[in-house]
Amino acid sequence: MLLDEVVGTYRTLDALTTRAAAMEDPEGFVESTPGLTVIDEVQLAPALLRAIKLVVDRDRRPGRFLLTGSANLLRLREVAESLAGRAAWVELGPLTWAEITGAHPPRVVDAAFGASDSSDFLAQIQLPPASLTAGARVRAIAGGMPATLSLDDEMRGNGTKVTVRA
Image (cartoon, rainbow, N blue to C red; front, top):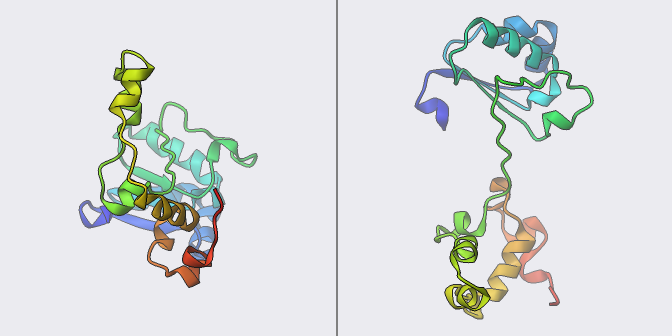
């Protein structure tokens, strides 16, 4: 985990007492921690964003806050503060098959832009062996969220019990 390598504090707003503290005194909540402050599920206390803006405006050192959550803050009606000019936004999707299996990622996009024409492109891409097709279907149904990867097929309600028709 990141906080094993740097000085900082992790707070999750899923915890009701933590969320209450953040909502009661947003500025105090974000000013009271040394080093990196990681706030998970920040969308649950939108007032924190204005408090973070004030703190960042007073001290412009980058990398002091890492805000995470399961909602796109910029699309939430309750969020009035965008942290424009003070934040970088990174949207993370589920893990890819290459990340899950440790395989090299496919180079289809590289081949598409590097090919001189469609015939050259088709010659550059390699189709996976037919034996991987069934595995790909099972992976697609299983999903790629990290917490579900260790669950067995029965716990996820899919896998070998699911019939996929092409």
